[in-house]
Image 1 (cartoon, rainbow, N blue to C red):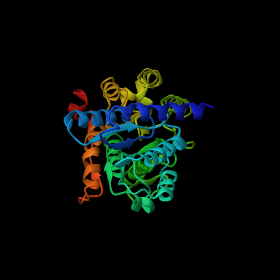
Image 2: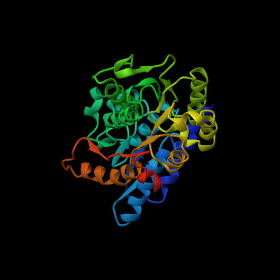
Image 3: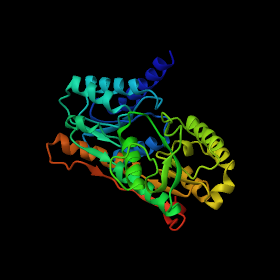
Image 4: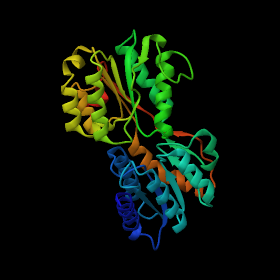
Length: 329
């Protein structure tokens, strides 16, 4: 019943979002993993900014997704419905990359399909024209570089990941492990360059902020000598009050750098957490730019223009040595 209610709400949002322009404008759809994630709201703001900047365009940008980031099946159904109803092009951030690719392969849409923020698995990338978003492997590399600056001898580490089948998150984890360990293709850090993943990790948040914070609290309690906790995505920090309570438990260790926290993304609550000493480095994506550029890329694809693949939107890093970016956000 809960799944059906969430899907009904998301489907209604699709209809409401596009209603005002549906009769005279062609739809460029952006579908994200879940409307409950503030990271994706930045993509929405970019989409809205594009609309504001292009009032006379024959196209409209609509932003949608399932109400909950845990509703992988709901996201697939929304994409199915949009393609059935008819859109000019679609940009998808797949939560479950294999499931979404499988459905796209079955539908075989005759409109341009691209991915945004998260990509299909390598074997399914023939299904989309291009990917627009972060170089996620490089993001993991940057996080490992930050960890190495703070802990040059390595240490015990726990990685916090999102959905098991999210290609972007898994790419970041691979970039972190390869860089921290100093060799390619590491499945799990087991002493390479001094880094060892502790028992019980990685942990998977399923993109839920409350679960992310509970996992952090449990990990800190069970592992008092932990050297590093790596939020491959920013989930826990998306709930600032809960994150503050969790980090209060280890503030002395954070101040002394006995325990370090490296986190993905640089949304305002996250940069505030950094300034409050609740993380040592933030490696940020540019979701607003994804939402702003997405419609133009889709129009290029509609017009049959050559588009680079992938299209990377860049990264922003703030740390204790160079806090300029985080100081302004």
